[in-house]
Length: 463
Image (tube, rainbow, N blue to C red):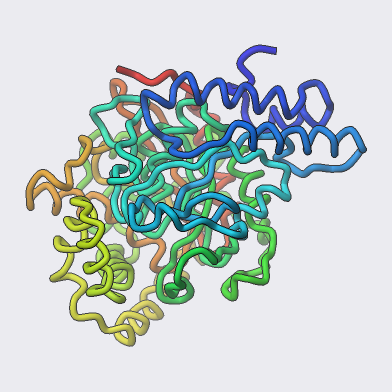
């Protein structure tokens, strides 16, 4: 069977479980695809073929014994370099951490193994995972396979680039301010930022920094189909005692009416016409699929949650973060911190958490009325690569456009990027948001949007 790397994770796992294809064959196809296209995009920055083939052999042996290897049996999956994978460096894009070797797997990595995934390689991110662009001084630049002149997104830019180019069927990413949703948007795939607490997390290789109620960073999947996001979410969200903020909430919540609030211009975002057209088109697709779509003039506040999310993310330990960035010497990380200094310094945790409670109540009330919100991922089409470092005006432009991504994690809500098509060869998509732990509603609406358009497929990198 040719081109196994083109299949969805769901299709491939079914073939492997039924022994029509071996995990070894899938792994060999994944490695061959990596060898063929990764030199053009630098999405995967560390991989060990012998390890990959050994994982696949163990899965084939278990299937031969009649064991159930889980929903991702034999499926090649990539892991972002900012989470622990036993025996590999947790660099987070830093020279400072190139020798920080993990002794145990992060819970999300352990859960992927338990679900039968074959860990194919480690994907790139910007230094400290700070930016919506992916370059650093230890691993270099990652390119967007759709168009090398635009960003692949960040901070999970390697993940988005890899899965778009057919390197792996699912990519692991992390998201604190759009770091899953934006690479999915920029690379023309789908990406889910789950609710805070849905997927357990813990990095033993690095000093602990608060990730509970203060900083809402979560792991999640990027994939070429919504169905693959669904099975990946189930795999990643198995419990692990190491994360004290893990929430054992069922993946499927109570039934809700198929009703969507559509907002074309949330909280003064003023998106470009192509983005407005994509959201309106997604609304029409939902209507055709039987959803009630009600256009609303505005959402609950996004601007203030985005400002406080930035405050929590960068203001907590700002001087220590700046000192580390100066030691690293990464221009993008320094631009991010210095450009936001006035917004986040001095830091007042009590004030931030008090406002979070009030703003979250407003959003909870909104989702009592509307099960799902449809709105832009970004105010612009994917940016020219490294736009944030061009000048002060460009830096401000980037941060304004990303308002819908930065705000949603502040309330701990799930957000789903659905790729909806291309403008020329530039991807565009939409964001679906639901109440806390209602990823099922995002995915249900996402499947309707996906079904109304052209399915995302793996591509050869463009020149």
